[in-house]
Length: 213
Image (cartoon, rainbow, N blue to C red; front, side, top):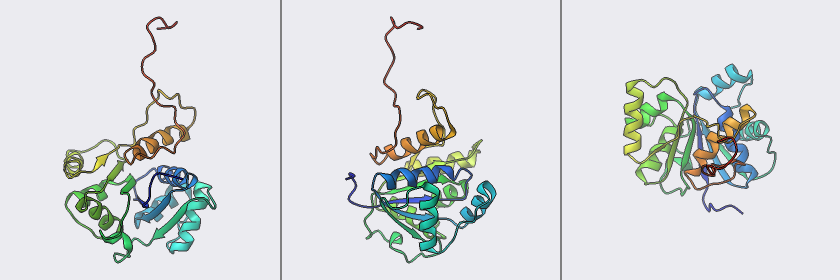
């Protein structure tokens, strides 16, 4: 059993790096979490560009799509929402959630959220988290940041969002791209106090008498 009694929203935007979203869904479902997914309109185009795969828009087909990509056919609870369904449960503060993680998060989405704009369900769901005082975690995948990007991210941080850039570390001695991806996913989920990603965490400095130091 996991520690969350309410579902976690996973928002997926058209930023490059959809592997982050796949690994997030994989680890959450494997640990039997309930996940509500809303992917922006641009995700379909990015999937086509990065993987040569077309993401379906119909909710039930999309659920099968994400489970296939994450290689988790049955565990957990997954529900997908059309990005244009602004009347969905996620659009209301009365629908209780554990918060929302947007991974990866485009600078377009950051800008709209910073301005308080909600043109689709993903943006509305994120706005709801802020107004309800719930956790909103953004994983921006962009480089370099312009001054506008930095100001928008600062505005969201001031409003209560947590910013977790897709910047992996190396102290866990990664051997594969997946290891680097999982580090970012783990640090993002840490913000919700979710520990379901196998990760070698920092254990502090070794003693000065350790050979090689």
